[in-house]
Image (cartoon, rainbow, N blue to C red; front, side, top):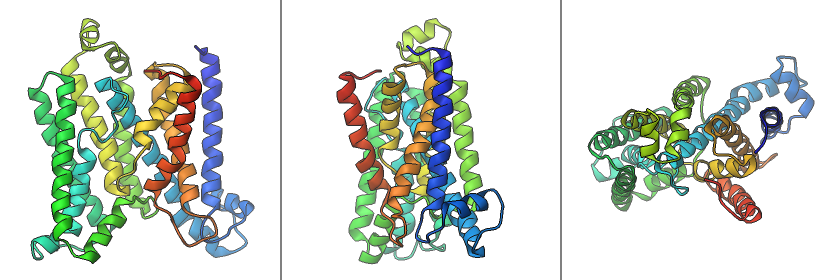
Length: 343
């Protein structure tokens, strides 16, 4: 096991790496901006071309902050779910929260085709999509909370959550079947995921949602460590299992639901980053894992977004695809190198 001083050094290095990734991400895009001008714009100094400051502060920096928030939120929610269910295959979307957000978006985008305009009551834009997705994820989260009050077995709750996800996915499939080609294309484009469409006001709202979820996760670090050894052991240490379960579910709902509502469904990060962090730090202590997954998730999302935006090109690849294509081989390599999974 690494010593506390070594952990501190690791965290300092990780923060420096995240800062470098942030700067590189902001400096690259469809418009070529020299690194020196990028740094000047970030520091509030004048740039060679006045429009470059506008581009950086209104498009690139919000996108980079969105990458940090989405990566951190998904990574922590994945860690919470894997610990709660003591299942290495659990991710932030096992409770059907992401599927609920997808259903909300599908009702807004595809619903008008099936219900003859009944759902076409608002303007289809980023705000209405985020609102519809938030309502969908909140309703599923509320349903899961009601079920959690009646189910004592955590594994049964996991199965029920997966069933909720299957139901909502089936409803989306029905909507897709009756939808027009144009509406279906809009929904598919949303499902690719995107972190480049948020304004500063939307980013502030996402920050508040993710911040509350992170605070809950930090507050329950000790119960999370106890839950790794089983609910009976945790109960013997004085952990309130029912309250801890509720709080962890709420935190996951805020983190995963908030990210899906504002950025669409983004795969891989929540499932793989906790494993990546355990392999690198060689520990199961959540006092180390919680801040580590937050930083690793942010770094990975910044790297994937930098690749997805294809520097000096107007084309942007789906972030949902890049996270899996880039990240999955890294986790496979680490597991083969370590030859065992730490959990």
